[in-house]
Amino acid sequence: MEMRHLGSSGVKVTPMIFGAWAVGGWMWGGADDQQSIDAIRAAIDAGVTTIDTAAIYGMGHSETLVGKAIAGRPREQVVIATKCGMRWDDPKGEGVDPWNQKTPDGKDVVIRKNSKPASIAWELEQSLKRLNTDYVDLYQIHWPDTSTPFEDSMAAMEKLRQAGKIRAIGVSNYNVQQMQQAGKAGQLDSLQPPYSVLRRGIEKEILPYCRDHNIGVIVYSPLERGLLTGKVTPDRKFPPGDHRNEHKLFTMESRRNILAALESIRPIAEKHKADFAQIMINYTMHVPGITAALVGARTVQQAQSNAYAMTFSLSADEQQAIRRAFDPLVV
Ligand SMILES: NC(=O)c1ccc[n+]([C@@H]2O[C@H](COP(=O)([O-])OP(=O)(O)OC[C@H]3O[C@@H](n4cnc5c(N)ncnc54)[C@H](OP(=O)(O)O)[C@@H]3O)[C@@H](O)[C@H]2O)c1
Image (cartoon, rainbow, N blue to C red; front, side, top):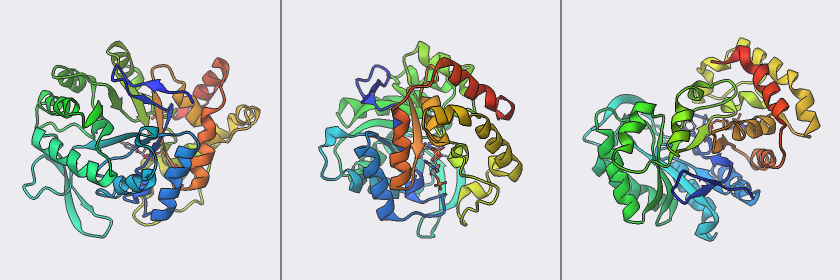
């Protein structure tokens, strides 16, 4: 199985990573725990041995499910990435950008971005317990906390690396300036930004910066939360609590446009005996500068089917044709 280096950390990841946000249920209209655990195990068995989660996904629930899914396997068989810096459980209310949310069991909470050194160290201990492990392969700051100097947060992450509790350091949703600041206090190994054939914002500055500084790039939502699978038709309904009910890319007009663009690349999909999800994952993980595509799946069937994306190669012409088909829809 192909593995790709994450910066100069020594950690290697699969070109497709299992994204464990939706399996936590939070913001996705709930999820069945056993189905979620089975989906994670199916992904690992199919060769997707890198798993990305976060403390905030289901307020700890996604990490707990990942811990259960990997129980009994040799730890080194899987690469575990998780994230800190989105606190829902801090009675002192430190941090910025308060966001009112509900826990999976319906309690009101305020989520704040908090990357203060003491908070990062405390959060890691909680994540290790939930994941049922004694180290995390990639620890990432989830969103920039503008009330804490980025160098201070980075220094805290380096301390955890020196203590052997994390193997690589990442950030998510940072811009170039924020990465520059963080890079003053340590070795940044990866960035996790949004990216898909519809969302190309990182191409201009962020991808060149990461290439020049040997920072791995793990992109999220390459299927645009299901839209690029071709399964989100105008009649598809999402349950209450699924954030896609309010997402601007899920309007009826947008769904129709995306389905039409997908239809135009059907001959490429048929040639590779692939469905649209597999084509889009393969396309994304072969965009120059991208280390891995982070793909969410909620069922065994989705996890196994998506893993097929790691088994074929699109030609340069096909890669270009796919990109061109979505040019008019780029957001
Ligand atoms: N760092 C951040 O701020 C951030 C933000 C967002 C995501 N992420 C990470 O990136 C991961 C992936 O992003 P994402 O979950 O937003 O979106 P995504 O990977 O673009 O889409 C995942 C969703 O698409 C649907 N899907 C997947 N495979 C399918 C298939 N074969 N056929 C039909 N539908 C399929 C599933 O939803 P349904 O079956 O319900 O349609 C699934 O939950 C997350 O799990 C998380 O780890 C990080």
